[in-house]
Image 1 (cartoon, rainbow, N blue to C red):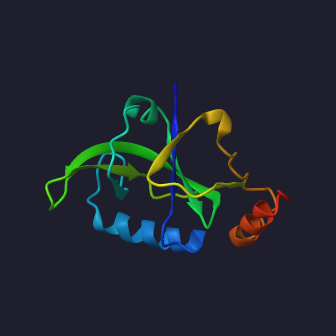
Image 2: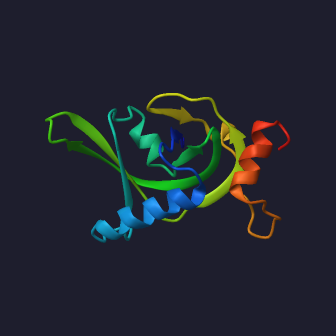
Length: 142
């Protein structure tokens, strides 16, 4: 059974900011079995790793709203310069816009059940800019 992660995208003001960050990270990483991947290192290693690797994604919360996701391809244990064990979340660099879903602030990451995840935006569907979708979602209009 698939499970997703949801994480605050700290420092990003928009989906474009996240896209720039992902592009830079992917350019630095060597090409592996999944192509180039972007990497995000987090403190805790998920206990439900098998479920995440069964088609899970990381849903990014930008300014209080989930707006985009990335498919997770690998979870890798890493040790920082401070000798603390961490988890590198490797994701495909492609960003998939989602329906806007407001989220309150939290620390770290949370599991997200597939039934609770926002749906992907269809390519033919009319799309408001992500910033407008975030504002409309915060007002409860989406």
